[in-house]
Amino acid sequence: MKILSFAVPCYNSEAYMEKCIDSLLVGGEEVEILIIDDGSKDQTAAIADRYQEQYPTIVRAIHQENKGHGGAVNTGIANATGLYFKVVDSDDWVNPDSYQKILSVLEEVIRGPKTLDLLISNYVYEKEGAKRKRVMRYAKALPEGEMFGWNETKSLGHTHYLLMHSMIYRTSLLRECKLELPEHTFYVDNLVAFVPLPYVKTMYYIDENFYRYYIGRADQSVNEKVMISRIDQQIRVNKLMIDYMGEQKNLSKRMRNYMVSYLAIIMTVSSVMMMRSGTEENLEKKNELWKYLKQKDSKDYLKIRHGLFGTVMSAKTKPGQKIAVYGYKAAQKLYGFN
Image 1 (tube, rainbow, N blue to C red):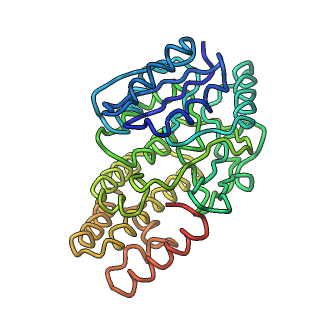
Image 2: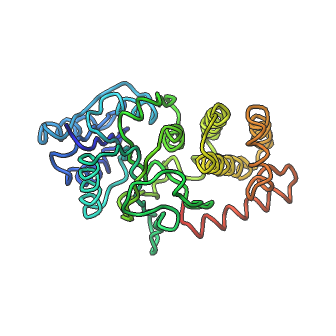
Image 3: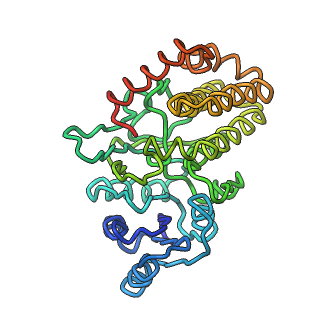
């Protein structure tokens, strides 16, 4: 049994996927690397097959018709044999020193008496051209080097929320929660970081800069212009999160507070992108999204609407929208995202 399965969704990734896969091979026989060729039209499939041929006990090449990032992650979950599971996008990579420490923790946990649901580590914004790399750490909010539950956590704040990049789930938990991402849709990583949370009872945080999150390609999904052009997909994911949040009952107070805070952040991102577009059509979509939240989850709507971001982001006036965009740009400069 492998300790850790990596799913690497690849679509026309020939220019950068080898750096990603080579960084994962450091794990050796303890890991499984699932290269999911999502209907690529370049040499991605051939590269995947070559790695499988060279490392037959570690790498599996899976070829499928194009289903988008979500469909590729679904395929990864369905085929994973490792006890734990992580998605690594094909233009990202992992740090080798941190990698060994991650595997050591998982080995220790597996031999222990308690079941670990979620391992958390840091991630680094590898922004092209940036002299200073922004590291997203959780040391002030999460106990380090021990297993803990939601009651032992502190507030993560509005900037240090968990992303897919910082999370390694127990594989069977993802199947228990029936995580199934929408196909042909970008931004589903938000669902990966959100939907399984009510099933997470035990966590472990290791203060290591494991995941390197590359930002810089013009066609990248988090590029602002690309996000605006795909705003309907962002809205779709946002609404799925709203639907899911409205269904949740009997959550612990701290888990609910965190999930509502995370939903507020995604509402903020969606709203800013629609305001940044400058079109009346998208401004109307923004107003409709806030109405949707109010109709589907009125209790959490009030928390989000009157929270730090909600008051400004739900603004319908031009001055309010300008303030929102200015605040977003300031945060973007400070934290280095997008």
